[in-house]
Every structure is written in C-alpha cells, then in structure tokens.
Image (cartoon, helix red, strand yellow):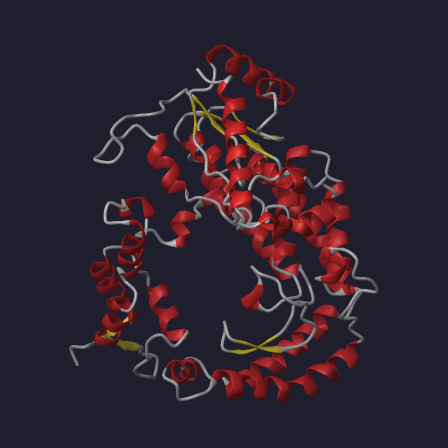
Length: 469
C-alpha cells in the first residue's frame, strides 16, 4: 500500500512535512509509546502515513495559534525557536546539569550576534565586548558569549547556580578529568562488590522483564491504552499489586534497607540507604582530587547523577511528591518500574556524556574571558569581585567597561531557585540564600509580590548601570 512507510521513509516524509528534522529515533518513539501503530512483522516495521498526518496535525501549529490568541497577532513566533529539537536547545555544555527556567541558547545567540532582520533592527554587541547577565542561572549567556567571541560576566545569588555556570565555561585538562573519573568509577565498583545491591537489582530486573513482557507488551499495550481499549489506571494498578510479593521476597532475600534511619534533610528523605552510602563514598573520593577545576566538574557529574537517583517515580522527577520504596505502575513508560538502588549506571552515563560535551564545546569556544560571581546583583561590587577571581579580566573590564546587559530575569512566583537543587546544597554544604531571591515562589504572584519584584529588578539595574560604557 502506498500509505505505508518504513521507519526511514517516515522520518524523511515527516521532516519535509514539518519543516524540521525528524529522525528515525523520533518515529520509533511514536511507535514505542503508542502514538502510532506498528504495522508488519518478521523484522520489517511500517507505519501509516495517514496516521502520521493525524498525529502531527493534532498539535503542529496549535501552540502558535494558542499563544497569538492570548497575546495578539503581533507576537513574533520566530523567537519561540519552535523548530528546534531538544537536542539542539540543550547542545554541548548546556546540558551538563538540569536547571528549571533556563532560556535556550538560540535566543541568546539571536540577540548577541551581528545579524539584523525585520525584528532586530540593530546590532547590540560586537566581538570583544563585555556582556553582563545579573541573573546568570545556569550560565547560558556565558557559553554563547564565548562562542561569539565576547567576554561575559554572570552573577547569581545561588552558589550552586554559580558553580554550574562556571563549570560550563572553564577550560579543562580533559585527560586529567577522565583519569579522576576512571579512578572513582573503579573504586565505586569495588565498593559495590562488598554489598548485594547489584546482584539484587539484576535479579529484580530479570523478574520485571518477564512480568512486563507478559502484561505490558510493546507497543501493543500503549496503542490499546491510547485508543481506550484498556483502562490504564485500573489495569496498571492491579498488575503493580500482583508484582509486589515478588519484590518483597527479593528485598528480604538480599537484606535491602529501603529507608534511612532519619529523614531530617533532603538527602535523608529522598534516597534509599544503599544509594546514600554510594553518594557519600563518591563524594569522599572527589574530595581527594587535587586539581580544583577537575574537582568542580566531577562534583557537577555527581550532582546530576544523584538528581536522577531520587526515590521518586519517573513521572515525578521534576516535581517531587512522596518517596517511593517499592515497585509501581509507571504511566510514563507503560509498565511496572522500580526505584533505583545504585547510582553506578547514571554515574557512568553522565561521566561519559560530560566528557563528550566538554570536547564539543572546546571546538566552539573562543579565547575570551567568562566568569560567574556569587552575590546579590542589587549590591555587588562587580569589578572588585572579578579582581578577586581573575585580575587579568578585571583589568580589561576596568578599562573598557561593560557594553550592555542581556539576561532572563527570575519568573515571578513560579520557581524555587534554591530548593530545586536542595540535594546539592545538602551534600556540598553551600550556604543557601533563599531570602535574597527576587520573585521567589513562596511570595506568590499577588500585587505585593509583583511590586517587590519590580523594586528588586530596578535595584539590580541601578547597581549594574554604573559599570556600563
């Protein structure tokens, strides 16, 4: 039938249809998660072009129409960069660590580079200029400034945010970083040999594989759920209960301790005892690293790792609800899933990923200064703080001043900028300065909160303008 396409043909057709790259992996994802039906067998997979059209038409263009209805037809939708895949908006070092509320690098590049168009009618920055971001967050502006041949200064009230931003733009001795990672990984594996954790997890995965293949076959199960042939809530919960006795038997057999003895801090509440022990072991190994830059970037790898190892369901990773200590039905993956019992898998994954991303950025970065300062942008003495960290950059900044500010200010009452990394503050011992946040979540979005936000932003701009050209 002319309507049927193989995976490669489907990706090529969808790329042309949508005007943006759709990979074979994207098509396979749609099949795996029941968005479209898998047709064929014996090693040949096909999909219906008609079904693809229905799927893409169900959302393609809807976001633009919806936002223009709310904000007006003069909305410049081009600045949404909707055509980019997530892999492009989180390219190289931009994905070294998760961060809520960061703006995409394409938006920064649009305003920093030297092009003009119907919307951007003048060039604001040139190579060699110094750009300031007083709400640096995860350091997106610093990275893009480096790519474009500009110097950049970031400021953030969160010490951990500063660490993320600084790690993205630091130039590393990568063989040295890799050697330290290899040393720690080897030590962690030796540490795990002395416990039954990996043996237990391997047995649990084996049991889950058999159970899920029987009751949640891919992709048939999700396809039937999408079409209402199976009540996912009822069926999933029922099967999860059926598997619990198998899980509980293994817990007893391998003497797995699910909860820690106390739950005072984030690290106590959201991690099983076994994972908490591994985290502390790796952290102690990181402390042995002599090179400061290597120590910082490997700390970021550990932080990213433990964020993925919190005792929560896959669906609740971003917004924690209650700690999970047993197997459960996972709506995200359409099967019975388990909590994590070791950090090893994610530690190895993120270690490799980090090295690759740093290598990618090394090919793009320019020989310019970028630095991130921890402080309150309303009062910080910018040049004085740069002098402490980088005298050569301070000399340049004093001489030529800052050309301008480009920033994504905090969202009013939407994000708890410190709490989103509570695990890192617990582990690394950074001082929290929640009270200095502008527009914090706990103040909400009422009139008083908005007025306080305005006053905070004004104070930041007034302090920063004295350092401008």
